[in-house]
Amino acid sequence: MNLEEYFISHFSTKSKHIGDDGALINGYVYSKDAFFENIHFRRSWMSLKEIAYRSMVVNISDAIAMNAKPLYALLAVAMPKNISKSDMKEISSGFMLAAKKYGIDIIGGDTISNTKLDISVTIISQTKNPLLRRGMKKGHLLAYTGKLGDSKKDLKKLLSGGMIHSRSKFRNIILRDKFISTCTRYLSAGMDISDGIFSDLDKLSIVNVLGYDFLKKISKDVGCSGEEYEMLVSFDPRNRKTLQRRAAQTRTPITIFAKAARKRYKNRCKSHHF
Image (cartoon, rainbow, N blue to C red; front, side, top):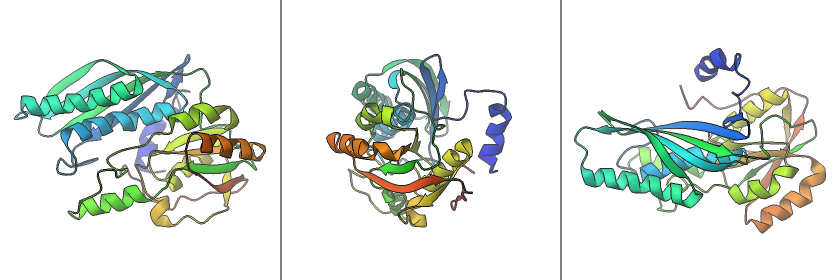
């Protein structure tokens, strides 16, 4: 058990709502993410508008992953004391751009002075047909959307002082909301890929008490690439053609790469959190 899992275990044993991308309560999903300067980003990597936009979208990803419609957002923003009004305007424009794109009403939050820019976002969503991590069964196939690995490559470029393309996934996250909303009835389990597919497979493995037989090889660089925000899903093999057809209709690339099996699974990646 890593330090993050150890900390969460103090609460998860006492709450039935902890364990998915968000907390499902009476048809509503509550999710929260932190986006801190020098931890998740550096000011030199992106504009303030891009930083604010990304901080919202990484949290909206949790709602999409559970087939929930984002409704409201609460923002907590800690800003340097010397921040200018034009900088504040740029930050707010990033929040509003994400809110407009996904139909979200920003209903409040808190601001505080700080030595750096730190952002925390809470998203409140609603769902009639939630997609949970629990539900995968032996023999079910696993697939991921999009292409994996580019986030880690681009992060390495940024850390070494290099530049990344304006359309890089690190800057412009693509959420698979249309794919999930049209395919949820055919999926047995799902979650977004935020810690790397190997680490997120571990989460599915633990909750469903299953391991995997891999049908395609995934390199460690790709498997440990975090902050992809693609979808990891499982489904009954009988729904394979239907899922592939729905993926094509929503222009969503999917790769079927493993089958759930009664065996142990070992995560090959280090924790992204500690």
